[in-house]
Image (cartoon, rainbow, N blue to C red; front, side, top):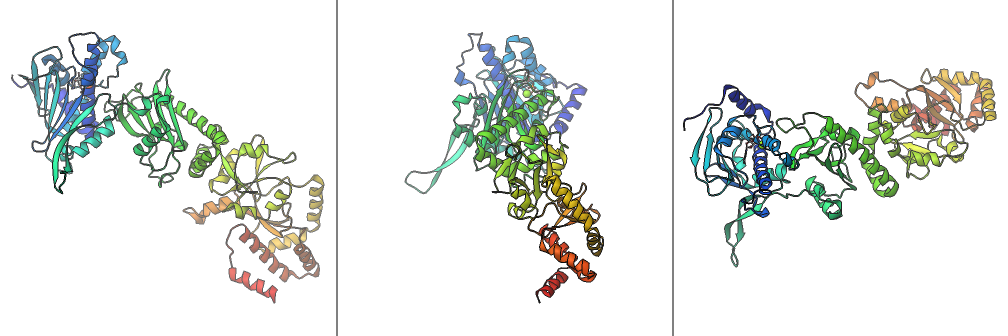
Length: 628
Ligand code: ADP
Ligand code: MG
C-alpha cells in the first residue's frame, strides 16, 4: 500500500506533541501501558455479552519485552485489537480517541475505567522512538494488520500475520545523544522502576522477562536464567476495604512508598462517594523531613486517576499548613489536561481539597483528644507549620488551627492547649499570660514570672520566634486576652487599691525616676515603679506594638540596621531594698552615684531579658568597685 500522508495539521500537531506537550519523555511507557489496559478492559467488557470470546480472567495480560541488540521495546496485549479501519482511524488521526468513542457507543461501559480520552497518548512513543510498529488483530477477526510510522512523514498499513487477537507495539529507540539517554529504557531494572512508578495499579498484570543469575548448585560459578515477573501490584491498597487491610500493611506501604524508616503516627484511609468520588490514603509522619522547613521542600499528595499516576506531588490538594501530610489521592472524576500531567479544571480538586482539609483537621483533633502522646510528637515536629498557617493567613486559618495549638507551660514544662489553659484559669484571672525566651527554664526564671506564679496563674512559654507574632494576630482566646509579661501596660495582677497606692508613690518619686531616665541617655522611654516585680529589683518591658522579642527577631534578619526597635521601659521594684538606696542617694543629692546605679540596674535588666549590654567591661568594673 502506498504511504499515506498525515494531514498538514496533523503533522504540526504531531510535531507539537513530540516536542512540547510532555515534560517527561519517560511517560511514553505509561501511555502505551494505559492503552493496552484500555484494550483489555474493552475486551473484558465485550466478553460479558459475547460468548465467542473464550478468555479466562487470568489470561488478560500486558507483556513487555526489551531487546538491547535490536534496540527495541515491545508492549503486547491480548485485548480487543484493531481492524484495518481502526488502525487507520485511531492511529492515523491525531486527537481521535477510539477509547472515548467506545465509551460513548457503549452506554453500559460508563462504569469501566477507561483511561484514554484525548487520542494523543500513543504519539508520545515518538519522543523516544525513531520507528513505531503496531501489529494488531481485532478480537473478532482472523486478519492482522501492521501500522508502521517513522514520525511526521506518515504511516503505512499492510496486511500481516498474528496468531492471536490483540496488539503488539514495537518501538525502535532513537540513538542516544544531545544529552538524551534512550538506552536507559532497555535496562530491565530501569523499566521495572518506571512501570512501578506510573502503572503499579493498572488492574492487569504487566509481565516482563527478566534476565537473572544465580550460583550453580555446589559450585562457585554463576549461571544465567530468565524468569517472567509481574511488575505491578495491581490492586492498590487504598482501593481495598479498610477491614481487609491490616495496620501493618499500611505501615509497610508507607515506609516503602515514602522512603521513611519511621512508622507514621497516623493513617487516614478514606473512600468518599458523592459528587466527586475519590480514595485517599494519608499519613502523618512521625518526623519532619530534614528539609521540611526549607524552601526546597516539595509538598503535596500523589494523584492517581484510574490507577495511573498523574502527578507525583500535587500541592493543590492540601493547604500549606498541612504540608507535612504524605499520601495520595485517587479519583476518576478529575478532568485531566491533554498531557495528563496536570489538571484541567480545579473544581473537583477544590472539592477534594476542602474535604481532605476537614478530615485532617478532625483526625488531628481526635488524636489530640485520644492519643495525646502521638499528638505531642506531631506537634514537636510540625507545630511550627501550624503556627505559620495562622500567621501567614493573617488569621484566616484560625478556625481550622486554633484548637490544635500547643504551648509549654512554665510550671512544669508540659504541653498545654489553649482550651486546657483556659479551663484551668483561676476565677479572678483576667488574662492568658505568656512570656518569651529561649527555653522554659529561662522563662520561668524571669523576674516578672514570680508574681504570676504567686497568684497561682499559669504562664505560657513562647520559645518560637513566631509565637508573639501569632498572638499579635489572635489577640484573645475564648474572650480572654493574651498578655505579655514584658509587654508593658496593666498586667491585671494588682487590686484597684494597690494600683492607686502605686500611682501615688510614683507621683511622689517622679523626679527621682526622671533623673534615672535622663542618666540613661535616651535608651529607655521611661523608668517606672513596677507592678510586676516582687523579690527582683528590676526588669525591662516595652510599650507599643513592637515587643522586645520582636525586636530580637527583626535584629536577626537581613537589613537589621534599619529594623524597628521596641520602646523600652525600665521597671524598678519599690518593694526591693535597692529602691530605698536609690531614694537615699536622691535625697543626699549624689547624682553621680545615682547615674552609675541606674546604668548598673539597666544592664542587669538587659541581661535578664537576653540582650547583650553595650559595655560589659564597664559593667564588670562597677561591680568590682562595689565589692571593694
Ligand atoms: P487515548 O488513549 O487517549 O484514546 P491514544 O493516542 O493513546 O489516545 O490512543 C488512540 C486510540 O488508539 C485509542 O483510543 C484506541 O482506540 C487505539 N489504541 C491505542 N493502543 C491500542 C491498543 N493497544 N489496543 C487497541 N487499541 C489501541
Ligand atoms: Mg491512551
